[in-house]
Every structure is written in structure tokens, then in C-alpha cells.
Image (cartoon, rainbow, N blue to C red; front, side, top):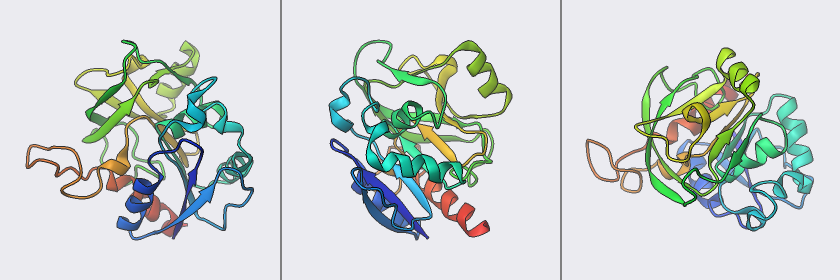
Length: 231
């Protein structure tokens, strides 16, 4: 399986995403924001960072980059797409996911290992988890507060489209403790925490078992491989 990772000006975590894909036994493919070519990949990752310096709004300029027309088309046809942090912001700005992300409630950048509850296990990126499973994923953002209109929030809840929820304290003021959501089809997922930083022992978050031993993030990528193999 070939999973593309798009680099935008200001991306920071594309290499980490590529490594996570390799550890999931898939082939990472580097893609460039200025191209109109997805190079025949089977899935896509929009990585974290500060694309275009977060000018205007985080993810807003990147959402209209040339390659995003291909991303939108591929997502509409069912290709698995994962937006991580800045990538999540891009997905909302491109209207592939509802809502938006605003400045953290306390106005400060937040960096910590975050406990999440897995709310939806039927997406292309979460099928390897168990419903209600609590996982530890690193979080680092300044504009991570998820917002949406009340009727949109009710719809997300009613349709089971909240993919992840913060546990043990809301780090950024996201409404209803929402950390990540999915589209109706379950192929597009966006979240603020960084699963690509929790894929290899010795480099992940601390757990009750040992320091830096957390690898919960790897399941995002193995889930995508599983979903692709099932097609």
C-alpha cells in the first residue's frame, strides 16, 4: 500500500508521518502542495505544522493549494484521508469536515501527552481500536479549539462522527471535549493530537509501563492499511 504525505510550506511533521507509515508496513510517498499529482497513492496524510505561517487562519491558505483539488476529489471517491493538527485545520477549511479550529481557550500553546477516548472504531483510521479505548497521543497546538454550530455538534454526536474525545481535562477549549471527527463515510478523519509521534518504543509518550513506551499512534496507520486491504 502507498500512502502519500503532503508537504506544505511550513509543514513540520511530514517526515514523522512517513516513518509511521513505514512502521505500518506501507510505502510512504512524498507529495508537494504545488502539484496536481497524487502519484497513484492509496491514502493520504495531511501532516501537522504551521503551513504558510498560519496567516489568515490556520490551514486556510493551505486548503486552497493546488494539490487540495485532488485531495478533495479523492476523498469524495472514498480514499482514506487523515488530517493531523494543521492537517485537521486544512480539512475543515476545505469543507471536507465540518466546524473549525480557533485559538486555544487560554491563549497559549499547549504541548503535552494527551489521553483520548476512542469514540468511533468504524473509520478507515480507527478500525484497529476498541470502542471506549483510552489511548495516549502527544498534543501540540496553539489553535486547537474545535468549534461548530450547535446543530452541527448535535449532528456529529447523533451520527457517531465524533472520533476522539479528550479525557482528563480539555487542553484547548474544544466544544464537547472533541479531539477528532470523521466524515459520514468514515474515510476522512481529522484530529488535533499527533499519532505519528507515538509509533515506536523509546520515542513515544510515557505510559504506566515505561517512559517513552507509548505506541498507540501506530494503530491509526495499521488501521488504514487494513481498510485498504479489505477493499
